[in-house]
Amino acid sequence: MNKYLMMSAAAVLASTGANTATAASFTFATAGGTSYCDGGTVVHNSGAAYSWQHTNANCASAVTYGQGLLGKTAGLGKIANMSDTYFGQLYGIFSEYLSYTLPKKVANGKQWTLWVGISGVTSFEGNSGVLTNVSPAARKPSSHSKVTTLQGVKQLIALHRSNKG
Image 1 (cartoon, rainbow, N blue to C red):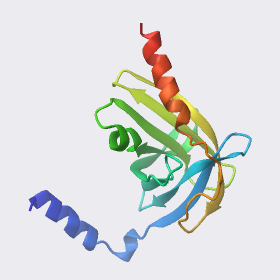
Image 2 (image 1 turned 180 degrees about the horizontal axis):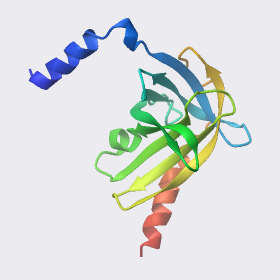
Image 3 (image 1 turned 30 degrees about the horizontal axis):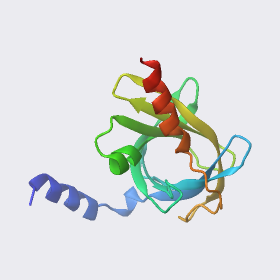
Image 4 (image 1 turned 45 degrees about the vertical axis):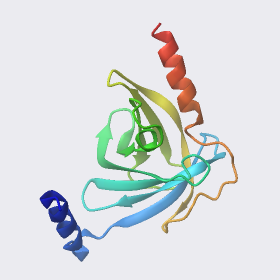
């Protein structure tokens, strides 16, 4: 077995109560509050470290994962910039990648933003809105919407590629 894998497993098993995590689940919504079908559960570990599950990522039960760090930006304030394995997990070798900015404290009405990157040369805002159905316990999004926050991403990427000529 890989010694680094064993060391990582030992570190996880040796964690104490001082490293206790707190979790909050939510549903993504438009700026007007209309819920999408997907959401997530954010786990705030110790310090500035966050991890999360993007639940119902494709409106059909897909779950992706990510991590991020708490920081402060001029335009967005205190946010956790969270990675997402959506493209890596579902589309294999493509060079598109996603990240979300989530509020420091997950609460109803707080702002979220989806960022899209392509091939290490560009990054742009792909979607944004507010969080709804926030709960301290992990749960699946409660919306019955059939629209995911990622639906427009493929169109944005295609548009970006077509503009490169």
